[in-house]
Structure formats: structure tokens, C-alpha cells
Image (tube, rainbow over all chains, first blue to last red; front, side):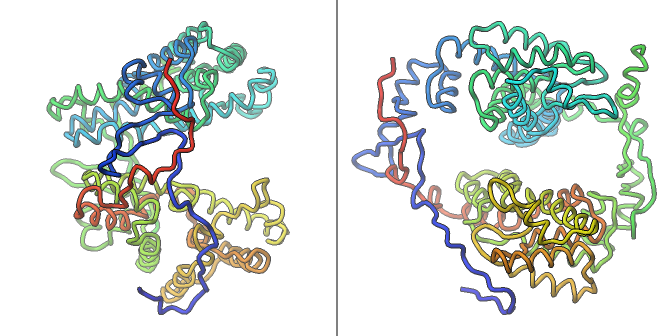
Amino acid sequence: MIENKQQGQKVERRDETFAEAIETKIWCETASESNPYIAQKNLVHGYDHLELMAKKSYSEMTFLMLKGELPGKDELALFDATLVALSNLGPRHAATRAVMNASVSKTDITHLLPLALSILSGAHLGAKEVFDSVRFIRKNMNKDPEAVLATLLDAGDQKVHMPGFGARFGDVEIIPEQMAAQLASFVAAGKGLDWCQRLIGIAKEYNVGWFITGVASAAFVDLGFTPKAAAGLFQMAVSPGLLAHGIEMSNKPITAMPFVAEDKYHYMESGHGCD
Amino acid sequence: MDVINKTQYWDERRGHIYSAKGGWVIGKGIASHGYSLLDDLVGGKSFFQVMVLNATGKMLPENFTRWLEATFICLSWPDSRIWCNQMGSYGGETKTSPVAAICAGVLASDSSLYGPGTVISATRFIVAALDYVRQGGVVDEYIETMAKTRLGLVTPGFARPMAKGDERVERMRQVAQELGFVDGPHMRTARAIEKYLLTQYDESMNLAGYIMAFLSDQGFSEQENYRIYSMCVNSGVHAAYSEAYDNVPDSYLPLRCEDIVYTGIPERVLL
């Protein structure tokens, strides 16, 4: 093995113990008698996988995977409605535009979803915002929304900054508010959606409304998902729309998407940097 | 406010791109920050100079570029056990394209424990430490007050996973000296922190701490640092991917069913 010629600082392995084997509470495989690498039975949180396949829906399975238990009837109704609400963000969202542009420029088809989900990972209208928003809601939903708002109001610009909520293009958005109201009417809707509705009722005075990320976050809070699970669930939930918009462009010529003409591309040359 | 004024900012950008970075005028040329790509950069400047130019607008002098390249060499090496490199191995195992595997490795390195994911916290830590010192404080107090959390001592840029000590820092100090660099105030503060940590906690500066102190002395911001180092682990991922791709499928650390220890709920009936 190689040995450094440099005589510098002494470097020692930390006295840490790494696991000998991978542990999981989610998945149990029983090996076949003839080959220890081939499974003959799989359990998911204790349930036989093939039986789940026969009796449960994809959303129930997702809920089970992330929470360890199958959803009750009311929880499933709210979960399904949330997944439907998020299933497409439309071609004006940056992640959808990314996948459409990649697809039309003939990016390998297997990269479409991963690249779109990377763009959907951000702190503005993306999974990072859901992560932050779930934490924000969980931290504050037992407090008076007016008091929370007062602590967040920037004295300088009189603006309120809250993950999952705000204004776009100068106004609050309409459809996310409608979605939140619809989700709040479900039996399983709880403190998260209710508190956010009361918060936004007051925050509208400061031009703050629901973002789609806030809607997702409030519903995921009521369904008991952690911030980490919620961020990934948001990406999963949006995936059908991302994939569909990508596939739609995949057989079209590269000219099927706009390419800004040179007279509309304005390079504002400001000279060299520090040479 | 009428509708036209309310949306004017966005209307002006609807169908238009305004860029201070550069652009391509078909048939005429490509500009980057006031340079002609083909006339001023190709053949005369290194890839790293142009990459940093595009990321920050700054054209680094040659000695700075050599220092930067040396840090990139320090930051990624061919050992498939390293967490981001494992992504390359799994990509090779499943025969992804190299692009998918390298991207997965780079994404994995956006971590709070290692890789470019530590850049922001390491930069903030050393910048805040120097501010503290400039306001009359001493580093010992800074460590004992600002770096103490309920989770213990949090000193981004100091200590590292797996090992105590970081031989790369010493080597980079030699490289910097050979290239004519002298320590600035951030690096002097980092050294003072290291001295205290070595004495009190047997921990030293790690490479990220060294790099961020160096770059802060050179006037780079935390965001500039993050952007420059966003791809810094790729070469080790390349190696891991290539080796696994060329090997027999399922041969990278194969697992028997029994190798996974199930600690969940025993088998139950689905109602």
C-alpha cells in the first residue's frame, strides 16, 4: 500500500465502530433453499409483499413504506387527494420546463425524471421548501397565528417570509388556496391545515398566500409525515406530471420548444473581471 | 397599482433573457464576461480559470489556478468506499450511463458531513470567527460560546469523518507557499482556532476549513465558494464507476438475503 512521503501532521483512524451488516425495519427477505442470494418471500413492515400487491393501492403502499402502518380510510382519502393535487405543477414550473427542454433536446430518456426532480429540490417551490415549511408548521401550529406573524414581519420592508407561503408575480396564488380549502374539508385534516388557513387569513394583509409547497406541507403535517419524508413525498407526488410533460416532448423536433432569438437575448457586457 | 405596473418587472423579461455572463451570437462568436471565448480564452487560459470565470466573473491568475487545481486533486480520490464514490460503483453495477453515475455521486457529496455541502457552514464559521476577533474577542471564547450547541461542539472546517488529522492541509500549505501566497487574516484565525482545538479537543483543521479560510482571504463569498466546488468529487466517482462498470454485474459487495438484518414487525396478517 502507498505511504505518504510528506512528513506532516499525524493522521489516525477514528475509533468508530461501523455496522457489520445493514439493518432495516422495513423489508425482510427470506432466502430460497437453493440459493442464499435469491429471495423466496418478502415482507414489508410485516406484510407479505405479494398479498399487498393483491389487496392494496399504490398510495396505501407508499403510506405503509414511509410510516410503517397502512393508512385508515380517512387518512387514505386525504393522502390520495393531496397526491392528486400535486400530480402536475404545469409547464410554467421550472422543473417541468427543465424536463420538457431536456426531452426535446433528446436527453437520454432515463435521465428525464432524475433531472426534473433535481430542479424540483429547491428552496423556492421545491422539495427544500416543503422540508422547511413542514418544520415551520410543526414548530408553530400550537401558537397563535397572529403572534407568529408578528414575529416574522420584517420591520423594514413590511414583508413576511415563511416557507411555503408568499406571493408570486405581485399577487397571492388562487388555486393553491382552493386546494388547501378542499383538503381542509377532509375528515383527516387536522391542526396543520387549520392553522395554516387561519395564518393565511391574517397574512393576506401583507400579500402572503399559499404556495403549492405550503399546501403539500400542511397536508403532510396532518398525515404525520416528518419533514424529510414530506420533502421526498413532494418529489414523488409531482413526478407523474414531470414525466408526462417530458414524454410529450420526446418525439418532437428540437424546434418544438422556444429558443430565445438573438434580438431578445441581451448580453450586458460589463468588461473583464479582475485579471 | 394597475395591472401593467404590477407585472412590469416580469413582462420585461417575458421572452427576453438579460445576461451579464455572456452569450453566443451564431456566426460571430461567444462571449464570457467580456472575453471572446475563442480569441481570449481557448489555448491561453486553463479550464479551471474559465470555470471560475463563469461561476464568479473573476479571472484567476495562474498561481491561484494551480492552487485551486491542487485542492481539487486533494478532494477526490479512487476509493469506492467513500460515500459519494459508492454512487459511482452502484451506477457501474447497474450499467447506468457515466453521466448518471457521476451526477449521482456529485449529488451525494452535497452533504453536511463532507464534500461541497460543507462549504457554506465552513465559510460562515471562519468569517464569523474573524468578525468575533475583530470585535475584540479571542478564538478560545468563540469556540466555547459560539460553537457549543446542545449536540456538542460544532466547528465546520475543523475535524473530519473517519480520521483525526488531515494531511492534505499541510501539503496545501506547502503548495500555497511555493506559489507565493501568504496567510491572510482568515487563515491566521483558522490557525489560532486549530491551535486551540488541538490543545483542548485533539482536533485539527480539515481541508474544507483550510480552503474556505484561504478563499475568504482572497475575497470570495460563501456562495462563490459553493459554486466553484460544486463538482469537486467527480474524479473519484469516475474511478469507482469505471471499475464497477467493467466488472461482472452484481459483483460490487454482493449481499445474501441473510446479510440484511430485519428489525421490524414480525409477519402479520393483512386484513
